[in-house]
Length: 270
Image 1 (cartoon, rainbow, N blue to C red):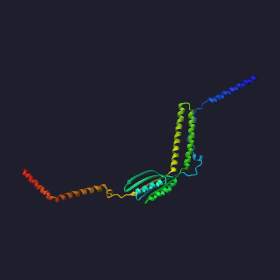
Image 2: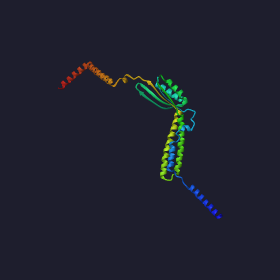
Image 3: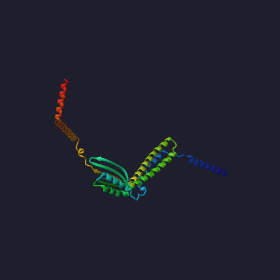
Image 4: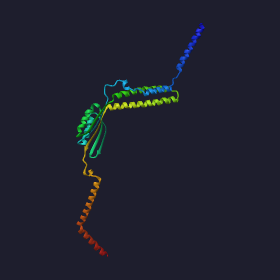
């Protein structure tokens, strides 16, 4: 009995050794089902991301203003506007000047911190002698910001899962399949990063698009049409021709004397 007991015990130990040895030596490879499951999780990542994190109490407002008005002197107003931009620590992102009909036009794109937005706008409008339009708009993007943050966090977790599957891949087909899904997730991560950067930039600075103009009356030559100018030129030429004929009449004595001398010279030659 003792010998049978020892044999049974020894056999049991061997089975345990083979069992644990097989488990430790087994290398997991990503199955098609597992890769597809991760892909499905990636597509459904954080559908309600805004609910996963608390919505910030502070608003994130994107403010925009579009203003156009007439000024008395374009050059002086331009200088004062540029000084006001510097005074409020704003950024003059873009300027352009053009001539339109009987107007000289100057365009500004100004980026200013939200807390200085109203103050700067009021100072700029002091240059106005005639307001054409004034459009203000604001959008709170706090909820969208939190939602994009949550989606980005979920996408990064999916990216790490794909990297883990990539390390487990044992052949070219498995590697290519995982890398295909990994590329898609990384594109989505880059898109979410870009959106967050845009929202941060737009809320950090508000935008004022300003157009000012000065009336500059055209000269008489600039106002008349091309046909009228041709008609006037023809009439002026005809008047010059008539004046030349009249001038020749004043010179008839000289013409007569010259003709007589010419005839005398011709006779002597004959």
